[in-house]
Length: 493
Image (tube, rainbow, N blue to C red; front, side, top):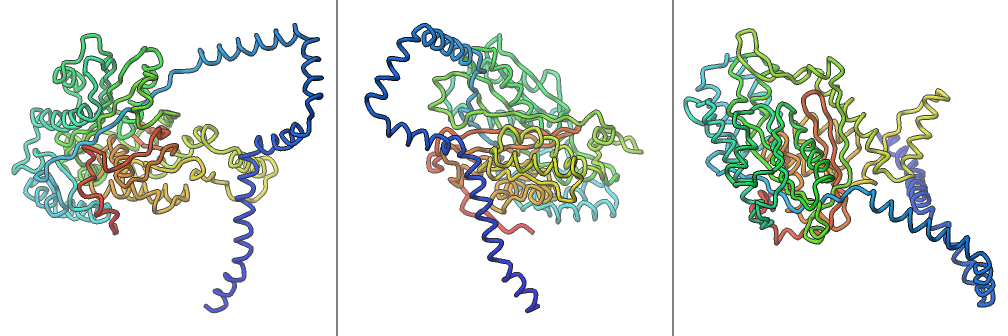
């Protein structure tokens, strides 16, 4: 043991030197343009007044060339600014926090499962084991229909649940932003398994009396990444709708998502999903920039549905006893990892500093062309983002992403604490995570936020935000964390 310790200590000076060499390399590449300008600035400082007069006289002799070049520059600049897509701003968002009476601890969950008389002893033991390893705390929420004895799994109860979480989130959002509902021109609601008629989006239109020509969309069956898809759809619509607000509502229904059979691959969803919803208000009005929290930078969507293994890894179907449920394949983590790899390969060139892109390219050339035996270089995304909101789908998924992207405990804290406090709320979980970062006072003006989610199909989707202001948690209203933020983080087994 002493020998090993000495060996490590002997190597420490080299590690320190390599660390500073890498930092110097990143600084050199990232600031190359400024470093090039230094000698030019020094040279111009030594020019005399006569030198500038001589330069001006030369330009007078080439007046036609100067005029043409200036006109061409102005024309190109005008075309550039006119052709740019409209900026999309996130005015604010809100996450629904249910009443304390809807809290569902592990003990309460198991008690309701036993009283339902739907499961064998083996299935009950399996569910308890899943819950103990889930990373969930004792205060996640379930719908009233699942807490009732006996369970009341009807479409009427599902509607009540949807109205409660959707309207709760939207009410808080409208109270924050004070936007007139008649100014909302785009409405997008996403919920994967509950798609009634009239639609969930029609329920929102009816409740808030939105205008008759509102562009209303209802996305179903798209899994936990549908929230990012909704933001991307809103962005596309805001590019062509002048001076418009877009309301995005992300939720999932537990009432009709309950599986009452004994197929283990389907029992997992019973254990993981919890109740929640988020409402987001986007705008393309330039006047809203100073009031907005974030500016939308990128949306990147990856779809692996062409592959049968990816397509079937999360699928709603009936078991051998004709009981409906959602089956999770044992290949889920592998599929999610492959989808993440594809997504970040697309996102990387858009967000990573040039220094990281060069290192990645050289590593790729060495491995693929020169057949050099070296590990694949994983770019350091901590150089591109200050905050990470990774879909709180489960402890195993978060563990894998933390390891593969080499993220710190601090970076993973919003995702892990959301999983602990609220559980997997499907497409809305990303917003509980961002709300956590805001409640902790971590968001500073200029910070970049990466939200990434996975969904059935199989999909991996990303959205990148740029903070337009420093978020002061003291003035944050309707944040679901504010009344208990000092209790976090906690140690999660």
